[in-house]
Image (cartoon, rainbow, N blue to C red; front, side, top):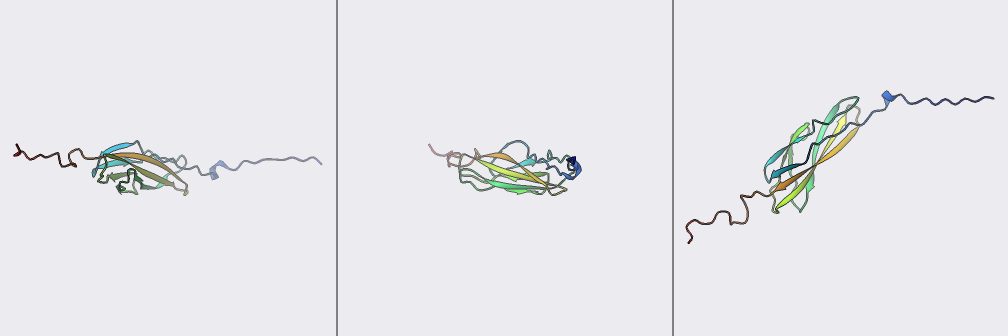
Length: 130
């Protein structure tokens, strides 16, 4: 009546590890201008990244979202909105999917500053006024 219990670990090759999304560092941009988003630092230890998806999560101070060009590429472009506040912080999220369907995401914050040459109407005084 001797009983032996054997625990067999699951084959590590069958356990897909999630990829690691890397949306790069935070950015600053003047309104209506664009800034590069670089997710090329994303990686997958035992496979490869099959897809990239950049999405704008919105901007604070009730400002409009920016647009993202080439949102399915490792390197995309964020086009900042035109804002009516001094600045607004926009959040962009990168989601990467590996060749086995696992996903990971990372966020980058982009501070959008108002164009110093616009607004207020005081920038171009009439030179003919006394």
